[in-house]
Each structure stands twice: as C-alpha cells, then as structure tokens.
Length: 298
Image (cartoon, rainbow, N blue to C red):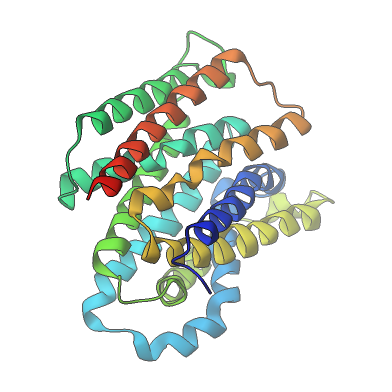
C-alpha cells in the first residue's frame, strides 16, 4: 500500500475521521443499556478478539525491548481512553465530545516538546494557547453545557487526549521498526485479557431488564470492530509514515462528523460550542502550519 504518498495519507485521515467521528454516537447508544465501565471493557475486549488471529501470528515479532512501549500503546493509547470517553459521555453530548477530542494534536506537540525533544517554535506555542483556550471554554460551560457552570466530565476527555498524545509520541519514537499491524495487534494482546477480567466483575442485572440491549450491544460491537480494531490498525500505520502531530491531525475533521451525528440525534449545538471548536481547530492549524513551513525550508 502506498503509505508514503501524501494523497493516500489524506485518504486514510478522512476514513479515520468518519470512523471516529461516528464513534461518539455509537458510545451514546451503547450506554443506554450498559454502564460506562461495561461499555469500555466490551469495546476493548471485542476489538482484542477481532485482532487475536493477527496477534497470534505476530508473537514471533515481540521483543523484550519493545514491551514497555507496546504496553504504553495498549493501555495508555487504547485501554484507559476507552473508559474515559465512556464515562464522559454519561454527562456530555457526543458532538461536544468530538469537539474536545480535537485537543489530541495540541497535547501531541506538547508531549513531544517536553519529552521527545521536538523542535520549539513560537507559533506552535500560540497554537497551543489558542487550542487550550477553546477547550477551557467548553469545560467551563457546565453540565448540559449551559454558560456559567463547570462540567467536570469534560476533563475525562481532556485526560484521554493527553493519553493519546503520549501513546502517539511513544510509537513514533520507540517503535518505528514495527508496522502498524504489529503495534496494534501486539498491544491489544495485553489489554484484552485485562478487559475480560474487569468485565466479569461487573453486574449485568440491569442490562437484562432492557429489551433493546442486543441493539445497544451491536452498537458497541460496531464501535469495537471499526472504531477501535480497524481504526487503530490504520492510525498506527499512519504514524509510522507521517509525523506524530500530522497523524493526530485527523481530529481536524472528526468534530464535523460528530456534530452531524449529534444534530441528527437531537443534540443542541450552540454558537458557544462552535466558537470554542473553532478556537481549538485554529490552534491545531497553527501547530501544523508551522511544521509544514519548516519542512519546506529544509
């Protein structure tokens, strides 16, 4: 596959944006029957089972030196964010969750600056500041996103985007010799059993009382197969052939699909939401624009 071609990378970004932009509404559907903890565990478990045949084939490529980075990719990049997003969506609309997810490139650059010696540029700092300002505006909008409050559940998504940033930088810096298929399948081989053990400790009594639970489980299964297993295979492959920040820029487009699904589901989107999202995306644009200029001048 022509991973080094710019047009192909952009095509993958669009596919990922649609998949992940649609994932927020699937989370919302799944949470109608299942608790946030059960939904998060099911998402990871199903994705791990789908990837298991690939994982077994890739065991021979597992090296001791890669183990810490693979554990970070698995737990920090997928396991914990799955639970954090589910928890957040118990009190946050799916469209707003998609907006906050746009912080990923901001934190990707910040983690790179602090821990991976990424080049320092003032325009990037300006982008960081603008992006964080937009996120703060969404967080301070309060429960139900009415002005004048504070929605602590939005912080779950902020933390999840920080985790994504750590994982993306780790994969780019420490696992460039592994393919996206190898990184994804091997990392999920470790987190799948943990998700299963955790799931077995939960109570499914309330799930059985909802006659529509099979539909809600189907939504979570779709989320796991497309939004986790397939999407992570594509994302980890993209990271190998692109910069960490450029790969994370898929979040430019994710809010568009998230908002469209949210509107179709009857969620209320205000000018305050859109204004804050524009600030976040402007910050992300400034971060990436400077990197492109730098690349052209070298």
